[in-house]
Image (tube, rainbow, N blue to C red; front, side, top):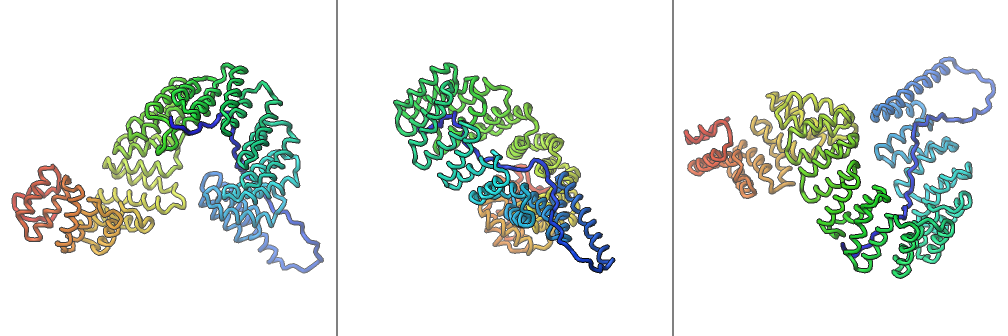
Length: 591
Protein backbone atom coordinates (compact mmCIF):
# COMPACT_ATOMS: atom_id res chain seq x y z
CA UNK A 1 0.00 0.00 0.00
CA UNK A 2 1.37 3.44 -0.91
CA UNK A 3 1.60 6.28 1.56
CA UNK A 4 -1.73 7.94 0.75
CA UNK A 5 -4.44 8.83 3.22
CA UNK A 6 -7.37 6.49 3.89
CA UNK A 7 -10.14 8.80 5.00
CA UNK A 8 -11.80 8.17 8.37
CA UNK A 9 -14.92 6.29 7.46
CA UNK A 10 -16.97 7.55 10.39
CA UNK A 11 -17.33 10.82 8.49
CA UNK A 12 -20.59 10.88 6.67
CA UNK A 13 -19.73 13.29 3.86
CA UNK A 14 -22.48 15.80 3.24
CA UNK A 15 -24.10 15.20 -0.07
CA UNK A 16 -26.24 17.95 -1.48
CA UNK A 17 -29.66 16.46 -1.88
CA UNK A 18 -31.22 16.80 -5.32
CA UNK A 19 -34.80 17.52 -4.63
CA UNK A 20 -37.12 16.09 -7.26
CA UNK A 21 -40.86 15.76 -7.29
CA UNK A 22 -41.85 12.15 -6.77
CA UNK A 23 -45.03 12.58 -8.68
CA UNK A 24 -46.23 14.88 -11.38
CA UNK A 25 -47.76 18.01 -10.00
CA UNK A 26 -50.38 19.37 -12.35
CA UNK A 27 -50.85 23.03 -11.69
CA UNK A 28 -53.28 25.54 -13.07
CA UNK A 29 -52.51 29.20 -13.57
CA UNK A 30 -54.35 31.27 -11.01
CA UNK A 31 -54.70 34.84 -12.11
CA UNK A 32 -57.43 37.02 -10.71
CA UNK A 33 -59.81 38.17 -13.38
CA UNK A 34 -59.95 41.95 -13.67
CA UNK A 35 -63.22 43.68 -13.09
CA UNK A 36 -65.02 44.27 -16.33
CA UNK A 37 -67.81 46.53 -17.46
CA UNK A 38 -70.66 45.19 -19.43
CA UNK A 39 -69.69 44.84 -23.08
CA UNK A 40 -71.23 43.29 -26.10
CA UNK A 41 -69.41 40.03 -26.96
CA UNK A 42 -69.54 38.27 -30.27
CA UNK A 43 -70.97 34.77 -29.70
CA UNK A 44 -68.65 33.29 -32.33
CA UNK A 45 -65.63 34.64 -30.46
CA UNK A 46 -66.87 33.07 -27.23
CA UNK A 47 -67.36 29.73 -28.99
CA UNK A 48 -63.88 29.97 -30.45
CA UNK A 49 -62.32 30.61 -27.01
CA UNK A 50 -64.26 27.70 -25.51
CA UNK A 51 -63.13 25.49 -28.37
CA UNK A 52 -59.48 26.47 -27.77
CA UNK A 53 -59.84 25.77 -24.05
CA UNK A 54 -61.27 22.31 -24.72
CA UNK A 55 -58.51 21.61 -27.24
CA UNK A 56 -55.90 22.73 -24.67
CA UNK A 57 -57.36 20.48 -21.96
CA UNK A 58 -57.51 17.54 -24.35
CA UNK A 59 -53.84 17.94 -25.36
CA UNK A 60 -52.70 18.51 -21.77
CA UNK A 61 -54.42 15.41 -20.39
CA UNK A 62 -53.06 13.30 -23.24
CA UNK A 63 -49.58 14.72 -22.68
CA UNK A 64 -49.66 13.63 -19.03
CA UNK A 65 -50.81 10.16 -20.07
CA UNK A 66 -47.99 9.84 -22.62
CA UNK A 67 -45.51 11.09 -20.04
CA UNK A 68 -46.69 8.47 -17.53
CA UNK A 69 -46.27 5.77 -20.19
CA UNK A 70 -42.69 6.90 -20.89
CA UNK A 71 -43.48 8.22 -24.38
CA UNK A 72 -41.36 11.33 -23.93
CA UNK A 73 -41.28 12.50 -27.53
CA UNK A 74 -45.05 12.29 -27.91
CA UNK A 75 -45.56 14.11 -24.60
CA UNK A 76 -43.21 16.90 -25.72
CA UNK A 77 -45.17 17.31 -28.96
CA UNK A 78 -48.50 17.50 -27.14
CA UNK A 79 -47.25 20.02 -24.56
CA UNK A 80 -45.74 22.15 -27.32
CA UNK A 81 -49.21 22.12 -28.88
CA UNK A 82 -50.63 23.29 -25.57
CA UNK A 83 -48.27 26.28 -25.54
CA UNK A 84 -49.22 27.17 -29.10
CA UNK A 85 -52.83 27.46 -27.91
CA UNK A 86 -51.98 29.19 -24.62
CA UNK A 87 -48.43 30.65 -24.56
CA UNK A 88 -48.95 31.73 -20.92
CA UNK A 89 -49.75 28.31 -19.46
CA UNK A 90 -47.25 27.87 -16.64
CA UNK A 91 -48.56 24.32 -16.05
CA UNK A 92 -47.64 23.27 -19.60
CA UNK A 93 -44.25 24.98 -19.21
CA UNK A 94 -43.58 23.07 -15.99
CA UNK A 95 -44.52 19.68 -17.44
CA UNK A 96 -42.43 20.37 -20.54
CA UNK A 97 -39.51 21.42 -18.33
CA UNK A 98 -39.64 18.12 -16.43
CA UNK A 99 -39.36 16.25 -19.73
CA UNK A 100 -36.42 18.37 -20.90
CA UNK A 101 -34.73 17.86 -17.54
CA UNK A 102 -35.24 14.11 -17.85
CA UNK A 103 -33.49 14.23 -21.23
CA UNK A 104 -30.65 16.27 -19.66
CA UNK A 105 -31.56 19.37 -21.65
CA UNK A 106 -31.15 21.56 -18.59
CA UNK A 107 -30.88 24.82 -20.50
CA UNK A 108 -34.34 24.45 -22.07
CA UNK A 109 -35.76 23.23 -18.76
CA UNK A 110 -34.43 26.22 -16.81
CA UNK A 111 -35.69 28.75 -19.37
CA UNK A 112 -39.19 27.25 -19.25
CA UNK A 113 -39.22 27.20 -15.45
CA UNK A 114 -38.01 30.78 -15.17
CA UNK A 115 -40.86 31.84 -17.44
CA UNK A 116 -43.38 29.72 -15.50
CA UNK A 117 -42.29 31.28 -12.21
CA UNK A 118 -42.68 34.78 -13.63
CA UNK A 119 -46.25 33.86 -14.58
CA UNK A 120 -47.04 32.00 -11.36
CA UNK A 121 -44.54 33.05 -8.64
CA UNK A 122 -46.43 31.35 -5.79
CA UNK A 123 -45.95 27.80 -7.09
CA UNK A 124 -43.27 26.14 -4.98
CA UNK A 125 -42.91 23.08 -7.26
CA UNK A 126 -41.68 25.27 -10.10
CA UNK A 127 -39.08 26.78 -7.80
CA UNK A 128 -37.93 23.46 -6.35
CA UNK A 129 -37.32 21.99 -9.78
CA UNK A 130 -35.51 25.12 -10.94
CA UNK A 131 -33.32 25.01 -7.80
CA UNK A 132 -32.47 21.40 -8.61
CA UNK A 133 -31.47 22.34 -12.15
CA UNK A 134 -29.42 25.32 -10.96
CA UNK A 135 -27.65 22.95 -8.59
CA UNK A 136 -26.91 20.46 -11.36
CA UNK A 137 -25.49 23.24 -13.52
CA UNK A 138 -23.39 24.53 -10.59
CA UNK A 139 -25.34 27.77 -10.25
CA UNK A 140 -25.23 27.37 -6.49
CA UNK A 141 -25.83 31.02 -5.57
CA UNK A 142 -29.02 31.17 -7.61
CA UNK A 143 -30.21 27.83 -6.19
CA UNK A 144 -29.57 29.12 -2.65
CA UNK A 145 -31.56 32.27 -3.46
CA UNK A 146 -34.54 30.15 -4.44
CA UNK A 147 -34.48 28.31 -1.10
CA UNK A 148 -34.22 31.69 0.61
CA UNK A 149 -37.41 32.75 -1.19
CA UNK A 150 -39.12 29.52 -0.17
CA UNK A 151 -38.09 30.05 3.47
CA UNK A 152 -39.75 33.44 3.47
CA UNK A 153 -43.05 31.63 2.84
CA UNK A 154 -42.27 28.62 5.04
CA UNK A 155 -39.60 29.58 7.57
CA UNK A 156 -40.04 26.40 9.62
CA UNK A 157 -39.13 24.09 6.76
CA UNK A 158 -35.87 22.45 7.91
CA UNK A 159 -35.20 20.88 4.53
CA UNK A 160 -35.21 24.28 2.84
CA UNK A 161 -32.83 25.65 5.45
CA UNK A 162 -30.48 22.69 5.12
CA UNK A 163 -30.45 22.95 1.34
CA UNK A 164 -29.71 26.67 1.57
CA UNK A 165 -26.74 26.00 3.86
CA UNK A 166 -25.40 23.19 1.66
CA UNK A 167 -25.69 25.29 -1.50
CA UNK A 168 -23.95 28.25 0.13
CA UNK A 169 -21.19 25.83 1.08
CA UNK A 170 -20.83 24.77 -2.52
CA UNK A 171 -20.82 28.43 -3.56
CA UNK A 172 -17.87 29.04 -1.22
CA UNK A 173 -19.79 31.48 0.99
CA UNK A 174 -18.38 30.19 4.27
CA UNK A 175 -19.82 32.58 6.84
CA UNK A 176 -23.25 32.68 5.19
CA UNK A 177 -23.31 28.87 5.14
CA UNK A 178 -22.24 28.71 8.81
CA UNK A 179 -24.98 31.17 9.71
CA UNK A 180 -27.54 28.97 7.96
CA UNK A 181 -26.24 25.86 9.75
CA UNK A 182 -26.33 27.69 13.09
CA UNK A 183 -29.93 28.68 12.49
CA UNK A 184 -30.74 25.07 11.69
CA UNK A 185 -28.96 23.96 14.86
CA UNK A 186 -31.07 26.39 16.91
CA UNK A 187 -34.15 24.57 15.68
CA UNK A 188 -32.99 20.92 16.02
CA UNK A 189 -30.29 21.09 18.70
CA UNK A 190 -26.79 19.63 18.53
CA UNK A 191 -26.70 17.45 15.45
CA UNK A 192 -23.91 15.29 14.04
CA UNK A 193 -24.65 16.08 10.41
CA UNK A 194 -24.66 19.81 11.02
CA UNK A 195 -21.48 19.78 13.13
CA UNK A 196 -19.59 17.64 10.63
CA UNK A 197 -20.69 19.92 7.79
CA UNK A 198 -19.39 22.95 9.67
CA UNK A 199 -16.18 21.15 10.67
CA UNK A 200 -15.41 20.31 7.03
CA UNK A 201 -16.25 23.85 6.01
CA UNK A 202 -13.86 25.27 8.61
CA UNK A 203 -11.05 22.90 7.63
CA UNK A 204 -11.42 23.82 3.98
CA UNK A 205 -11.36 27.51 4.89
CA UNK A 206 -8.29 27.11 7.13
CA UNK A 207 -10.19 27.76 10.37
CA UNK A 208 -8.82 24.69 12.15
CA UNK A 209 -9.56 25.83 15.73
CA UNK A 210 -13.25 26.27 14.90
CA UNK A 211 -13.21 22.79 13.31
CA UNK A 212 -11.89 21.28 16.56
CA UNK A 213 -14.56 23.15 18.52
CA UNK A 214 -17.33 21.57 16.43
CA UNK A 215 -16.11 18.03 17.10
CA UNK A 216 -15.50 18.80 20.77
CA UNK A 217 -19.13 19.94 20.96
CA UNK A 218 -20.26 16.54 19.64
CA UNK A 219 -18.11 14.67 22.19
CA UNK A 220 -19.54 16.76 25.03
CA UNK A 221 -23.04 16.11 23.72
CA UNK A 222 -22.55 12.32 23.68
CA UNK A 223 -19.26 11.19 25.31
CA UNK A 224 -20.08 7.50 24.73
CA UNK A 225 -20.33 7.78 20.94
CA UNK A 226 -17.07 6.33 19.54
CA UNK A 227 -17.39 7.86 16.07
CA UNK A 228 -16.94 11.38 17.52
CA UNK A 229 -13.55 10.38 18.92
CA UNK A 230 -12.75 9.04 15.48
CA UNK A 231 -13.57 12.41 13.95
CA UNK A 232 -11.28 14.11 16.44
CA UNK A 233 -8.50 11.58 15.84
CA UNK A 234 -8.76 12.10 12.09
CA UNK A 235 -8.63 15.85 12.55
CA UNK A 236 -5.46 15.58 14.61
CA UNK A 237 -3.99 13.16 12.08
CA UNK A 238 -4.75 15.51 9.21
CA UNK A 239 -2.99 18.29 11.10
CA UNK A 240 0.11 16.11 11.50
CA UNK A 241 -0.39 15.39 15.22
CA UNK A 242 -0.05 11.59 15.29
CA UNK A 243 0.37 11.44 19.07
CA UNK A 244 -3.01 12.98 19.86
CA UNK A 245 -4.57 11.07 16.97
CA UNK A 246 -3.54 7.73 18.54
CA UNK A 247 -4.92 8.84 21.94
CA UNK A 248 -8.36 9.24 20.40
CA UNK A 249 -8.10 5.97 18.45
CA UNK A 250 -7.32 4.17 21.72
CA UNK A 251 -10.28 5.92 23.32
CA UNK A 252 -12.55 4.33 20.70
CA UNK A 253 -11.22 0.84 21.55
CA UNK A 254 -11.71 1.59 25.23
CA UNK A 255 -15.35 2.65 24.76
CA UNK A 256 -16.24 0.03 22.14
CA UNK A 257 -13.76 -2.90 21.89
CA UNK A 258 -15.83 -4.55 19.14
CA UNK A 259 -15.94 -1.45 16.96
CA UNK A 260 -14.98 -2.42 13.44
CA UNK A 261 -14.64 1.11 12.10
CA UNK A 262 -11.62 1.86 14.26
CA UNK A 263 -9.58 -0.60 12.21
CA UNK A 264 -9.86 1.68 9.21
CA UNK A 265 -8.74 4.64 11.29
CA UNK A 266 -5.77 2.68 12.58
CA UNK A 267 -5.00 1.61 9.01
CA UNK A 268 -4.84 5.28 8.11
CA UNK A 269 -2.66 6.02 11.12
CA UNK A 270 -0.15 3.26 10.35
CA UNK A 271 -0.06 4.16 6.68
CA UNK A 272 0.64 7.78 7.53
CA UNK A 273 3.54 6.64 9.69
CA UNK A 274 5.02 4.35 7.04
CA UNK A 275 3.91 1.05 8.57
CA UNK A 276 2.26 -0.37 5.46
CA UNK A 277 2.02 -4.00 6.60
CA UNK A 278 0.25 -3.02 9.83
CA UNK A 279 -1.98 -0.69 7.85
CA UNK A 280 -3.14 -3.49 5.54
CA UNK A 281 -3.68 -5.85 8.48
CA UNK A 282 -6.03 -3.28 10.07
CA UNK A 283 -7.83 -2.83 6.75
CA UNK A 284 -8.45 -6.59 6.55
CA UNK A 285 -9.79 -6.61 10.11
CA UNK A 286 -12.22 -3.86 9.17
CA UNK A 287 -13.36 -5.81 6.10
CA UNK A 288 -13.97 -8.92 8.25
CA UNK A 289 -15.93 -7.03 10.90
CA UNK A 290 -19.67 -7.60 10.92
CA UNK A 291 -19.98 -4.26 12.75
CA UNK A 292 -19.08 -2.41 9.54
CA UNK A 293 -21.76 -2.17 6.85
CA UNK A 294 -21.02 -3.37 3.34
CA UNK A 295 -21.45 0.09 1.80
CA UNK A 296 -18.64 1.47 3.96
CA UNK A 297 -16.35 -1.38 2.98
CA UNK A 298 -17.11 -0.90 -0.69
CA UNK A 299 -16.49 2.83 -0.44
CA UNK A 300 -13.07 2.18 1.08
CA UNK A 301 -12.30 -0.46 -1.55
CA UNK A 302 -13.17 2.01 -4.31
CA UNK A 303 -10.95 4.67 -2.72
CA UNK A 304 -8.05 2.24 -2.60
CA UNK A 305 -8.44 1.06 -6.20
CA UNK A 306 -9.79 4.16 -7.98
CA UNK A 307 -6.48 5.26 -9.49
CA UNK A 308 -4.83 2.46 -11.53
CA UNK A 309 -1.93 4.76 -12.38
CA UNK A 310 -1.09 5.17 -8.67
CA UNK A 311 -2.56 2.12 -6.88
CA UNK A 312 -2.77 1.89 -3.11
CA UNK A 313 -2.94 -1.92 -3.24
CA UNK A 314 -0.93 -4.60 -4.94
CA UNK A 315 -2.94 -7.00 -7.16
CA UNK A 316 -2.53 -9.65 -4.46
CA UNK A 317 -3.87 -7.33 -1.74
CA UNK A 318 -6.78 -6.31 -3.94
CA UNK A 319 -7.70 -9.97 -4.49
CA UNK A 320 -7.38 -10.66 -0.77
CA UNK A 321 -9.87 -7.91 0.11
CA UNK A 322 -12.33 -9.16 -2.51
CA UNK A 323 -12.03 -12.70 -1.15
CA UNK A 324 -12.81 -11.41 2.34
CA UNK A 325 -15.87 -9.57 1.03
CA UNK A 326 -17.09 -12.73 -0.71
CA UNK A 327 -16.55 -14.71 2.48
CA UNK A 328 -18.35 -12.24 4.77
CA UNK A 329 -21.07 -11.11 2.28
CA UNK A 330 -21.60 -14.03 -0.13
CA UNK A 331 -25.22 -13.09 -0.90
CA UNK A 332 -24.62 -9.42 -1.69
CA UNK A 333 -24.73 -8.86 -5.44
CA UNK A 334 -22.54 -5.74 -5.24
CA UNK A 335 -19.63 -7.84 -4.00
CA UNK A 336 -19.80 -9.96 -7.15
CA UNK A 337 -19.86 -6.80 -9.29
CA UNK A 338 -16.70 -5.60 -7.53
CA UNK A 339 -15.09 -8.93 -8.33
CA UNK A 340 -16.17 -8.57 -11.95
CA UNK A 341 -14.60 -5.10 -12.10
CA UNK A 342 -11.32 -6.52 -10.87
CA UNK A 343 -11.39 -9.21 -13.56
CA UNK A 344 -12.22 -6.65 -16.25
CA UNK A 345 -9.33 -4.47 -15.15
CA UNK A 346 -7.02 -7.41 -15.76
CA UNK A 347 -8.55 -8.31 -19.13
CA UNK A 348 -10.21 -11.49 -17.82
CA UNK A 349 -13.47 -11.17 -19.74
CA UNK A 350 -14.91 -14.65 -19.24
CA UNK A 351 -14.24 -14.55 -15.49
CA UNK A 352 -15.79 -11.08 -15.30
CA UNK A 353 -18.90 -12.31 -17.11
CA UNK A 354 -19.25 -15.24 -14.70
CA UNK A 355 -19.03 -12.89 -11.72
CA UNK A 356 -21.64 -10.55 -13.24
CA UNK A 357 -23.98 -13.46 -13.91
CA UNK A 358 -23.69 -14.48 -10.24
CA UNK A 359 -24.60 -10.92 -9.30
CA UNK A 360 -27.64 -11.15 -11.60
CA UNK A 361 -28.69 -14.42 -9.99
CA UNK A 362 -29.05 -12.39 -6.78
CA UNK A 363 -30.37 -9.13 -8.29
CA UNK A 364 -31.77 -9.59 -11.78
CA UNK A 365 -33.35 -6.13 -12.06
CA UNK A 366 -30.13 -4.13 -12.39
CA UNK A 367 -30.13 -2.96 -16.01
CA UNK A 368 -26.52 -1.76 -15.98
CA UNK A 369 -25.29 -5.23 -15.02
CA UNK A 370 -27.19 -6.78 -17.92
CA UNK A 371 -25.74 -4.22 -20.31
CA UNK A 372 -22.20 -5.02 -19.14
CA UNK A 373 -22.80 -8.74 -19.63
CA UNK A 374 -24.04 -8.08 -23.16
CA UNK A 375 -21.01 -5.95 -24.02
CA UNK A 376 -18.70 -8.67 -22.74
CA UNK A 377 -20.56 -11.25 -24.86
CA UNK A 378 -20.01 -8.98 -27.83
CA UNK A 379 -16.30 -8.49 -27.04
CA UNK A 380 -15.88 -12.26 -26.74
CA UNK A 381 -17.69 -12.73 -30.09
CA UNK A 382 -19.92 -15.18 -28.21
CA UNK A 383 -22.99 -14.63 -30.35
CA UNK A 384 -25.03 -17.48 -28.91
CA UNK A 385 -24.61 -16.14 -25.37
CA UNK A 386 -25.29 -12.61 -26.58
CA UNK A 387 -28.61 -13.70 -28.06
CA UNK A 388 -29.60 -15.69 -24.97
CA UNK A 389 -28.66 -12.96 -22.51
CA UNK A 390 -30.22 -10.18 -24.57
CA UNK A 391 -33.46 -12.21 -24.84
CA UNK A 392 -33.56 -12.34 -21.05
CA UNK A 393 -32.81 -8.62 -20.81
CA UNK A 394 -35.56 -7.74 -23.30
CA UNK A 395 -38.12 -9.49 -21.11
CA UNK A 396 -36.96 -7.52 -18.05
CA UNK A 397 -36.38 -4.18 -19.77
CA UNK A 398 -38.70 -4.02 -22.79
CA UNK A 399 -38.18 -0.25 -23.26
CA UNK A 400 -34.38 -0.29 -23.57
CA UNK A 401 -33.34 0.07 -27.25
CA UNK A 402 -29.71 -0.91 -26.58
CA UNK A 403 -30.81 -4.42 -25.64
CA UNK A 404 -32.70 -4.84 -28.92
CA UNK A 405 -29.69 -3.53 -30.82
CA UNK A 406 -27.33 -6.08 -29.27
CA UNK A 407 -29.87 -8.84 -29.79
CA UNK A 408 -30.03 -7.87 -33.47
CA UNK A 409 -26.21 -8.00 -33.67
CA UNK A 410 -26.29 -11.55 -32.31
CA UNK A 411 -29.06 -12.62 -34.71
CA UNK A 412 -27.15 -11.17 -37.66
CA UNK A 413 -23.94 -12.96 -36.70
CA UNK A 414 -25.87 -16.21 -36.22
CA UNK A 415 -27.34 -15.73 -39.74
CA UNK A 416 -30.88 -15.43 -38.38
CA UNK A 417 -31.73 -12.71 -40.86
CA UNK A 418 -35.53 -12.65 -40.60
CA UNK A 419 -35.25 -12.49 -36.82
CA UNK A 420 -32.75 -9.62 -37.20
CA UNK A 421 -35.30 -7.64 -39.22
CA UNK A 422 -38.02 -8.28 -36.62
CA UNK A 423 -35.85 -7.27 -33.68
CA UNK A 424 -34.60 -4.07 -35.34
CA UNK A 425 -38.16 -3.01 -36.17
CA UNK A 426 -39.24 -3.67 -32.59
CA UNK A 427 -36.22 -1.86 -31.13
CA UNK A 428 -36.69 1.21 -33.33
CA UNK A 429 -40.01 1.87 -31.57
CA UNK A 430 -38.10 2.72 -28.39
CA UNK A 431 -35.49 5.01 -29.95
CA UNK A 432 -36.29 8.63 -29.03
CA UNK A 433 -34.32 11.65 -30.24
CA UNK A 434 -31.22 9.59 -31.00
CA UNK A 435 -30.31 9.76 -34.68
CA UNK A 436 -27.10 7.82 -34.18
CA UNK A 437 -28.84 4.82 -32.64
CA UNK A 438 -31.64 4.97 -35.19
CA UNK A 439 -29.02 4.91 -37.95
CA UNK A 440 -27.32 1.89 -36.42
CA UNK A 441 -30.59 -0.02 -36.19
CA UNK A 442 -31.22 0.70 -39.86
CA UNK A 443 -27.70 -0.48 -40.66
CA UNK A 444 -28.37 -3.86 -39.02
CA UNK A 445 -31.71 -4.20 -40.75
CA UNK A 446 -30.04 -3.34 -44.07
CA UNK A 447 -27.33 -5.95 -43.45
CA UNK A 448 -29.98 -8.61 -42.84
CA UNK A 449 -31.97 -7.67 -45.95
CA UNK A 450 -28.79 -7.70 -48.04
CA UNK A 451 -27.98 -11.21 -46.82
CA UNK A 452 -31.55 -12.21 -47.72
CA UNK A 453 -30.95 -11.04 -51.30
CA UNK A 454 -33.12 -7.92 -51.01
CA UNK A 455 -30.43 -5.61 -52.33
CA UNK A 456 -32.54 -2.60 -53.30
CA UNK A 457 -34.31 -2.47 -49.95
CA UNK A 458 -30.98 -2.89 -48.18
CA UNK A 459 -29.35 -0.04 -50.11
CA UNK A 460 -32.26 2.27 -49.28
CA UNK A 461 -31.77 1.50 -45.60
CA UNK A 462 -28.01 2.04 -45.85
CA UNK A 463 -28.68 5.47 -47.39
CA UNK A 464 -30.93 6.37 -44.46
CA UNK A 465 -28.44 4.94 -41.99
CA UNK A 466 -25.42 6.95 -43.14
CA UNK A 467 -27.56 10.08 -43.41
CA UNK A 468 -28.64 9.71 -39.78
CA UNK A 469 -25.21 8.60 -38.55
CA UNK A 470 -22.62 9.93 -41.03
CA UNK A 471 -19.66 8.87 -38.85
CA UNK A 472 -20.62 5.21 -38.55
CA UNK A 473 -17.50 3.74 -40.14
CA UNK A 474 -18.88 0.19 -40.14
CA UNK A 475 -21.95 1.23 -42.14
CA UNK A 476 -19.85 3.35 -44.52
CA UNK A 477 -17.38 0.53 -45.11
CA UNK A 478 -19.95 -2.22 -45.61
CA UNK A 479 -22.17 -0.12 -47.83
CA UNK A 480 -19.16 0.84 -49.97
CA UNK A 481 -18.17 -2.79 -50.32
CA UNK A 482 -21.67 -3.95 -51.26
CA UNK A 483 -21.91 -1.18 -53.85
CA UNK A 484 -18.60 -2.29 -55.34
CA UNK A 485 -19.76 -5.90 -55.56
CA UNK A 486 -22.93 -4.73 -57.29
CA UNK A 487 -20.90 -2.26 -59.40
CA UNK A 488 -23.32 0.52 -58.51
CA UNK A 489 -22.59 4.15 -57.62
CA UNK A 490 -18.84 3.50 -57.50
CA UNK A 491 -18.00 7.18 -57.08
CA UNK A 492 -20.25 7.30 -54.03
CA UNK A 493 -18.67 4.08 -52.74
CA UNK A 494 -15.21 5.61 -53.18
CA UNK A 495 -16.18 8.74 -51.22
CA UNK A 496 -17.62 6.75 -48.33
CA UNK A 497 -14.75 4.28 -48.19
CA UNK A 498 -12.21 7.11 -48.47
CA UNK A 499 -13.79 8.79 -45.47
CA UNK A 500 -13.32 5.59 -43.47
CA UNK A 501 -9.63 5.09 -44.28
CA UNK A 502 -8.94 8.74 -43.48
CA UNK A 503 -10.00 7.89 -39.96
CA UNK A 504 -8.53 4.36 -39.87
CA UNK A 505 -5.52 4.44 -42.21
CA UNK A 506 -4.02 1.19 -40.87
CA UNK A 507 -7.10 -1.03 -40.79
CA UNK A 508 -6.61 -3.84 -43.34
CA UNK A 509 -10.33 -4.53 -43.79
CA UNK A 510 -11.12 -0.90 -44.58
CA UNK A 511 -8.07 -0.61 -46.87
CA UNK A 512 -9.26 -3.72 -48.72
CA UNK A 513 -12.69 -2.16 -49.28
CA UNK A 514 -11.16 1.01 -50.68
CA UNK A 515 -8.83 -1.02 -52.90
CA UNK A 516 -11.73 -3.13 -54.16
CA UNK A 517 -13.82 -0.07 -55.04
CA UNK A 518 -10.85 1.27 -57.02
CA UNK A 519 -10.46 -2.16 -58.66
CA UNK A 520 -14.09 -2.08 -59.79
CA UNK A 521 -13.49 1.40 -61.22
CA UNK A 522 -10.55 0.04 -63.21
CA UNK A 523 -7.94 2.01 -61.24
CA UNK A 524 -5.71 -1.05 -60.79
CA UNK A 525 -2.40 0.64 -59.88
CA UNK A 526 -4.01 2.70 -57.12
CA UNK A 527 -5.92 -0.39 -55.97
CA UNK A 528 -2.61 -2.28 -55.67
CA UNK A 529 -1.13 0.51 -53.54
CA UNK A 530 -3.94 0.32 -50.97
CA UNK A 531 -4.05 -3.49 -51.03
CA UNK A 532 -0.33 -3.66 -50.34
CA UNK A 533 -0.95 -1.32 -47.37
CA UNK A 534 -3.62 -3.72 -46.17
CA UNK A 535 -1.24 -6.68 -46.42
CA UNK A 536 1.48 -4.80 -44.52
CA UNK A 537 -1.06 -4.13 -41.76
CA UNK A 538 -2.02 -7.76 -41.22
CA UNK A 539 -4.09 -8.85 -44.19
CA UNK A 540 -1.56 -11.54 -45.12
CA UNK A 541 -3.59 -14.05 -43.10
CA UNK A 542 -6.96 -13.15 -44.61
CA UNK A 543 -7.97 -15.36 -47.54
CA UNK A 544 -10.44 -12.89 -49.07
CA UNK A 545 -7.95 -10.04 -49.05
CA UNK A 546 -5.20 -12.20 -50.53
CA UNK A 547 -7.56 -13.29 -53.30
CA UNK A 548 -8.41 -9.66 -54.00
CA UNK A 549 -4.71 -8.85 -54.25
CA UNK A 550 -4.31 -11.66 -56.75
CA UNK A 551 -7.20 -10.26 -58.80
CA UNK A 552 -5.56 -6.82 -58.86
CA UNK A 553 -2.21 -8.28 -59.91
CA UNK A 554 -3.88 -10.23 -62.72
CA UNK A 555 -5.42 -7.03 -64.08
CA UNK A 556 -1.94 -5.49 -63.99
CA UNK A 557 -0.69 -8.29 -66.29
CA UNK A 558 1.17 -10.10 -63.45
CA UNK A 559 -0.49 -13.49 -63.89
CA UNK A 560 2.19 -15.56 -62.11
CA UNK A 561 2.15 -13.31 -59.04
CA UNK A 562 -1.65 -13.37 -59.08
CA UNK A 563 -1.63 -17.18 -59.12
CA UNK A 564 0.71 -17.19 -56.13
CA UNK A 565 -1.70 -15.10 -54.02
CA UNK A 566 -4.75 -17.09 -55.13
CA UNK A 567 -2.99 -20.24 -53.98
CA UNK A 568 -2.15 -18.63 -50.62
CA UNK A 569 -5.81 -17.75 -50.21
CA UNK A 570 -6.77 -21.36 -51.00
CA UNK A 571 -4.28 -22.66 -48.43
CA UNK A 572 -5.89 -20.48 -45.78
CA UNK A 573 -9.20 -22.20 -46.53
CA UNK A 574 -11.18 -19.17 -47.62
CA UNK A 575 -11.86 -16.88 -50.52
CA UNK A 576 -14.64 -16.86 -53.08
CA UNK A 577 -16.64 -19.76 -54.47
CA UNK A 578 -14.80 -19.49 -57.78
CA UNK A 579 -11.28 -19.30 -56.32
CA UNK A 580 -10.51 -22.89 -57.30
CA UNK A 581 -11.51 -22.16 -60.91
CA UNK A 582 -9.27 -19.08 -60.99
CA UNK A 583 -6.34 -21.24 -60.01
CA UNK A 584 -7.09 -24.11 -62.38
CA UNK A 585 -7.88 -21.83 -65.33
CA UNK A 586 -5.14 -19.30 -64.40
CA UNK A 587 -7.57 -16.56 -65.17
CA UNK A 588 -9.55 -13.86 -63.34
CA UNK A 589 -13.27 -14.66 -63.20
CA UNK A 590 -16.15 -12.45 -62.11
CA UNK A 591 -18.36 -13.83 -59.35
